[in-house]
Amino acid sequence: MRDEIIQAITTYTKRGWHVFPVLPGRKAPATQHGFKDAEVDPARALALFANNPPDSNLGIATGESGLCIVDIDPRHGGTIEKAIELFGELFNAAPVVRTGGGGTHHYFACDKPLPSGPLVDGIDIKSRGGYVLAPPSKTDKAYLWDTPLPVQLPVLRDLPKVDKPRTEATGETRFFYERQRNSELFKVLAKLRNGGADKATLMGAGVVMNKEQFVPPMSDEEVETIADHAMQYPNTPPPMLSVRSFSDITDAPSSPPKFLVNKLLLEHQINMISGAPMAGKSMLAMDVAVSLSSGTPVLQHHDFMSMGKKRVAYVYAEQGSDMWEVRAKGIAKVKQVTPELFLLSGYDLQLTKPGHLDALLTTLIDIKAEVVILDPLVVVFRLNDENAASEVAKYVREPLQTLIEHGITPIVVHHASKAQSLSNLFTPTNAYDLVRGSGDLTAMLGAVIGLWKDRRTGFTKAMVDGRMTGAAPFMLKYGDEVDVGDSDAAVSIEDLLSQANSIKPLQYFGPWVDYKEGGDAWTDALPNHPFDAGEAGDLWKTGTTKTYRLLDKMTAKGNLVEHKSAHGGRMKTTWKKTKPTERYDDSE
Image (cartoon, rainbow, N blue to C red; front, side, top):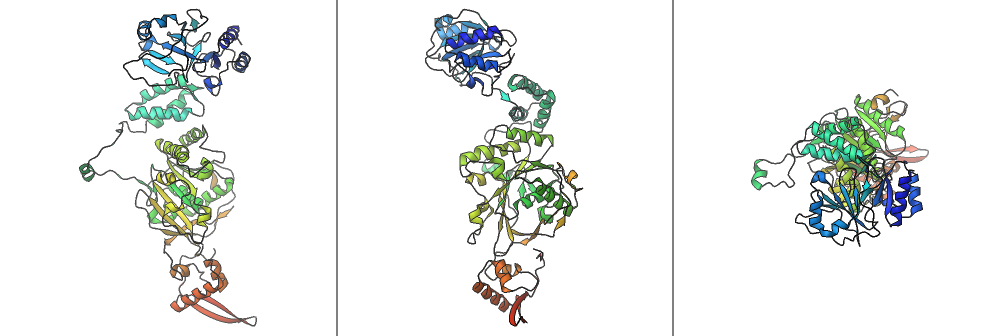
């Protein structure tokens, strides 16, 4: 550590000033929490600097130190004469530091920290929530005391009134660290692009922001990649408020959202697949992933056509990568396609933590993803309370909207309430009934597919709700077993298709028929082969008395044929359907 730094630390801390190390040659803090890490105890301050580069600059946390610094920057119109006009003769009593950028810092004490931020053009205040570099720091040039430090500083009790309203700021440039850089740069460049900026303007702004605000700076190639992504945005800024008269909406109605998958999911909206345990949420999500990334219909059903081929990333946040790979291979084998699908292990991903969204965005941008499936919400976000509207808004809606701002459509897999959905008394009326948590979760959705396992018939009911008219409720059933080969760790589907395991992919099983007790849906739930009352009761989840009553009722209607035979000296009764259910899978 340099002798002049040691001397400065000793001098400043004796005055009760809080000091902290700043990166060499820069204004960015060298510690994780910036000026909040500042120390006033000399020994602790020296130890803090000893753990950082020996040529570190020195920062003073102004508010904590009881300081108010008047920062004059002649590059932006600040002058000593203008400051004297504002502060009066008291201004001449303040000791002065010549800054590395050619300006001056004028030191005042204050009884309480004053608001930081611009006062007038070229004159800023650094006090509450701010910091300054102090001698012997160096940026373009060295910081030097122009006048000696007096025993006591002049006291500034309030700021002068100015005609132009001032906005309080932190008093210093805001810095972004490695896990924040990509998303913060994209926000700035996308806003510039939205205002009409061209590629050269975006690059110029990106290079400056990278140099002055990022710790450490990115490479120019990384800046250009983000600028290219921002160029995909329209270059005409939308109005803050869109006002349309009744005539406007009659003569030129707004364009509705576009389907990502016809009748099921929407493009550039937040989508969700939610449902009860064992209803097939993740299997349906993988079918969606393979279908979208190959441009084929979801569930092999012509009504659910993918509206264009997309590059899809599937983030599985539960352990067991082999399970996800086998599902992807099996569905791709049934469809006979090689999709543009990428599987991302997201077990350690937690989008409520700083930097995790930035890491996810970086990966998605690198693979040029257009759709991302996050499975499941409870692990990817790990909320403290799903029922807290503020937590849902901050930690779920905002990250998902950020993905949409980057041109990536999110599909989230979520759970219904386990106690509710497993109850024989619960029958959902719409897809929203199957979304667990705060009402803010349903409010943010463009489309939601709700899956419910009817424990009495064994069928899964799928319901679709959202901002567009979706598919009518339909039934799902697991199909024939598909042998897909051994699973091995891999990244893309091309790597997976050459490897032996098996799955039963979901199949579309026809429109949903709301059952009435003993009605056709109950008959459809029965197997095509002969069965006894015990097997029927197990399928319907009914007791012995009710089972026999229903079997007699269906036999009287002609839906079943009763057959009695001697078996081991006793009569055994079995039933068989008069008309087999064509879609029924007897292997289940």
